[in-house]
Length: 182
Length: 182
DNA sequence: TGAAGTTGTTATCCACTGATAACTAAGCAC
DNA sequence: GTGCTTAGTTATCAGTGGATAACAACTTCA
Image (cartoon, rainbow over all chains, first blue to last red; front, top):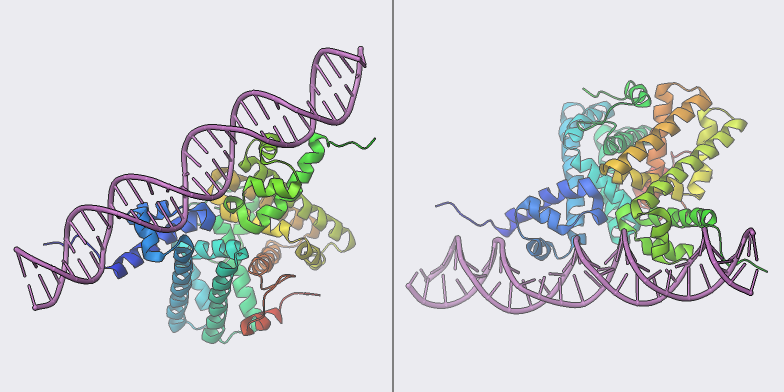
């Protein structure tokens, strides 16, 4: 007999996965809880019941993205505990771009005090983790994150990544000096 | 006799200024045309009539922000036509942070094809202008924009800038190596 | 001055969205 | 199998937000 229901915990992770996809596309304000529900395959009110509110759902999604990025960097550091090593992990992150985009949208929504606080905590944690893992200087780490932001933004703009649009001259020029797109 | 009405052109610029403020705070989806109208001191339907739709208003605002940044860089380049010279102009841009934030929100909303196209055009133009003004290499220009994105995002997160929140340890650490916050 | 064009408003609509409430049914213990 | 707990639904709502339409009032100009 196949079980037709999941535990609340299983639904939680499933819905966060759906929310990751949805929020990555249209951001906090631009995404409806119904979109998330549809992707997860449940009804919209159930999403609200499980998370309390749309904002809580977004916070959970943000935390998840932060945790997952940290996890990937820790894994990468076990192979090569340098900034270059972690930078290599950006390849994976661009494959799973929702993680970066959700954080980007979190930055945008940081005008909201609650979301802002969460996003700062998340970013601060990543910064600390990277320095700890690599032992890089503050300058080096700053540059690492700067390049990361550029990559993220170019991805969001569809200049970089799987669903990039037709290259304009300036894009080709810029791409020629971007870190390994391979 | 004092005129009590403005020309449509005057209203246009006034409303774009209001939209700049509003969109910079809460992004495309998160901002209502009524908020914009209130700031501009006109009725909400009039905003729509002048611009046709919310999307058109956002596009106009994006274009304005792009033009204004270009203008500032051109002015800065007349003094010092190097990346360092333009970087100095970031001081001004952080004072008028709405310009950067609107672009950041544009990146976030780039999943929409129309907005995406506009945002790519805007960014591409800025990239081209910077290279033209400074004669910098692609690598140097890339790093310049990477640092710019980091500054913008840190500003949006309230880590950097006038309305920055209480500094956490990692922030102080990062700030110590950020370009001239003077 | 009065007609025409322009600037602006109020009133209103309809679709949508987050949230609540009430109900249904699966799983599990005994 | 009976009853309790937990997973999930449908029905519904109150508020909002973008857009339209109809109207009012200022400006200009013959």
